[in-house]
Image (cartoon, rainbow, N blue to C red; front, top):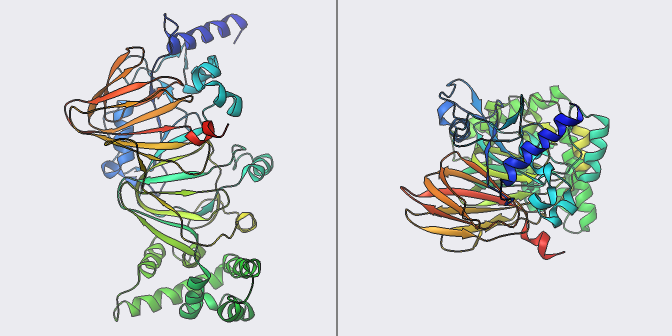
Length: 451
């Protein structure tokens, strides 16, 4: 592209973003879908429904897995600016479609706000998603910033960016996950009741943890826990296969005699999805979490987790870095995962949101990059989202309504639509024909408060 074309392109981007009166505008976005094999198939997937409503396409492939609906600027699934009301008409200069990142680059300070632009440059610091999960995701962790840079430099084809990826999952349906390591008391119970695990661990470690851990200091307990978990995850595939086979056989027999625990039932389900996988044994070491709709959990860097089933809103720092070690057909990096984990024990915090008004609850994890608002508006009700010093993304899950900005710009809303709201723009939303169910993602308010 020559200098003249580049000037024309920037002028086109600026026109889409600011308009003739130089006032910032709402941007309607066309978003991306990811078809991973753990996703829900066809029309049963919330992701499929949202993607086809958002894109204007006619038919959902009944045999396709629809796993993730991406909203943001990440290069693996960027959002594009829609021209007018036709979701098939993506704004473009020549043959090049205008992405959200293109528009932000016109004037990052005006679009993102000065504080956000100073901290994160000319990019949106969070990635907003919807997940539809039929089959368990991998046992995984996300690197901190230092490790992310190292992994990206060493293996850029696998670790495609250099950012960390703290995240939060907010349940839309009943949602299951494994998250964080169980307590020492719970691990003692595992070592006394799951012989298939004990067989893979050095007897001295198992006995020491079972009998002496209460008298040991926290650091020694952590080291012993790490040793036991590492031995399981590093076991020979043949030995793991034999252990899982024994475990399945034993639990299948006991199922006829007694009610299996929730964790035991999960173990059999995981075995049916990933036979002979070491992740089945790893599940014993992780907390089993069940979320109700409207509940959320968050995951920091270097914390082990695996989402099991259900549908959720997910928000995270803008990254797609994942280190996997089980329950997957993708590349595994067991030693990297074992070395990066923080081995913090205890049940994860469950967020139920803080009420902002009678219709809206805020979910704010301890990360600067993002927070999420959940808003359910009855017919004819209205709610205002005040001007904030950072950008926002709005996703309409269901219903119809209108949105009015502080500049008196008004547009209609309907399910599947996604809007980008620049910094310092107040919006008011009203549900029209039916109840309106929507989510907003933005910069965590603690970032502005702590400056």
